[in-house]
Image (cartoon, rainbow, N blue to C red):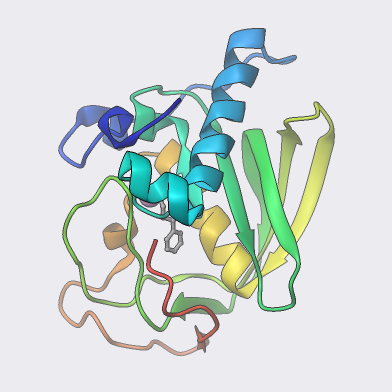
Length: 190
Ligand code: SB7
Ligand code: NI
């Protein structure tokens, strides 16, 4: 079972690296790791388990956060419409994105970052993502708003990019043109 001691923290070079493609079809080991990652996120949202194992709540986890430099991540959350996003993905790729940008009103956090970093994290408002899911199916996801933000946060980890790399250092709360706030779930910082 994955716990916080398995999570690599900022400063570790693995979080700055571009992760390697996962060979297709994925090996049993890669699949097992991704399943464990999904289970960790679920556990982190289970009040009892989170307390028992001291888990920080998260909505996603990328393999480099476990020190594994491979292109895979898992997510588990619900959007405001009650739609569930719960799966693991191999070799995810943004195949198109909007010009319009968005950001979470409450900023973002990261399980690999143990400090609060204020500022707006600028992201595409809409993305289309292709990947192979845990079931081994090739999927194409059209995402907007909060789900689009979460998937971009996870994909960034596969490219060595941290959420604060998208904050304007001169003016952390500046809102550029063509940008709309994502207010939903702004309270969720993990
Ligand atoms: C806020 C938090 C996350 C995504 C988008 C907004 C995920 C936090 C958990 N992780 O550190 C996963 O990489
Ligand atoms: Ni993160």
